[in-house]
Length: 242
Image 1 (spheres, rainbow, N blue to C red):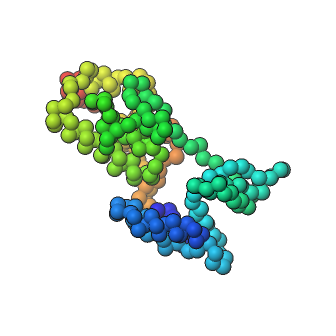
Image 2: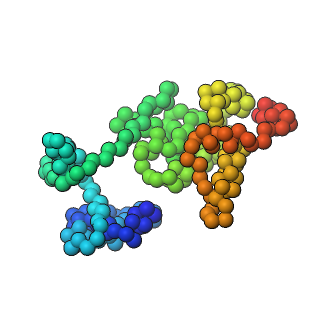
Image 3: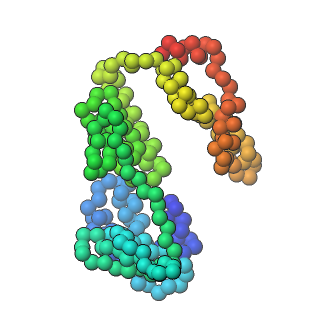
């Protein structure tokens, strides 16, 4: 939504009349505050039938691409209209595709083939005590960057509640064994100390003109993370006892 609002300063963002009606109907039924906020923003967008006065972005819903039209070059896209047998064609000179996403089954965990997620209740994997999921394998490919944060927090709350209720059994291995396994599989793993080193370096790179200058190279970030102070002997010993 912030990106959508930002676009309206330099161009018109519009919906056609049918999609405006769809948004109005969804808004009348919506009870979740976040969903209502998004729909209210969409409801305020212009109408695609208005005269063209500056660059325009049209958001189109309920359309499923059927085929790309054109011989030597793209001339249009044929769409099926969701929920009907009707089709429509939009003129186009450029087609951009996304890689898409579909969750894959994880060994020893239940899997919903239709939704491509691990069946769960707020992050608790159903019928599998001690197993939890977060992210797209939990809810499907939905949301934006901030959604994963609240999604993970919800799952962690379930885990903590189960721990406090005595539901979880003692781990089979110690924490040090998990860290060794992860570092064996991913030697360039960045831990909390490494992230703090990256954070400090980006802030320093930003100087006085901006909050930070972010790294764009993974190799650079890993190199900076490697400069983080190593755990003391006492910290390593305590970690081995956990």
